[in-house]
Length: 258
Image (cartoon, rainbow, N blue to C red; front, side):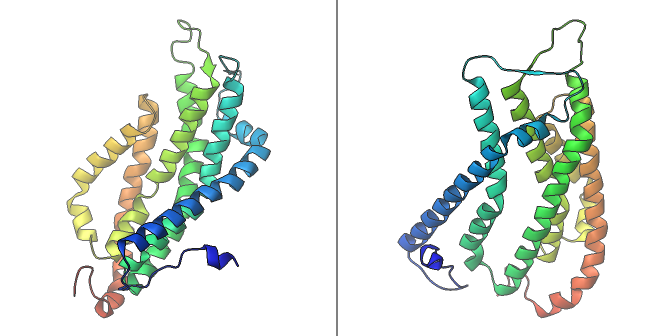
């Protein structure tokens, strides 16, 4: 019964009209939107625990304030919506992959599915790093800076937006090894090229760290150092995996080859 409502995934090389592609895309977008509804219900049911968890990194003695009659309600709804998007993220990724899967050959599909699995693990590690390592130190610095000059009050809606974006940025930043290994496995990059372009790569990682929602040098340092370490780790992992994948490369065509 459920399968009748799910779009059929095309096979590699199977032709379809533009209307059929658009109809499939529309159906998959609807599935993603529908998945958010039960996720929001679950998040709202546990809103107290979620808000308490997000408030955890605040330094002792700091309180959140709301300005306006509707802000407590709108802030709670915003937190629950962000949590719902995080819960529905696997469904969104799967629908995104299912739509583009026909463009890849079977051996590439297996590679991409493995990448998606490890990507989820690294995303969780990135969020944990931001929550337990970076956030407490960043908030300690930001909420006490010039506290003898300013009456520092923390607005709840701004705080939760800041924390949510920082956690999301940390999860995405930790995708560096999986992205690099994926490109190496698909023979788009190599460990030799990664070493050769270490300087430009470090500059790009520094720019990415600066784009995260932090403005103080403490947070920037704590964001940049792990990214550089992850890049170096990616190089060593690429060297090891190139040796393991060499036999598979002899049997598989390179990307873009006929």
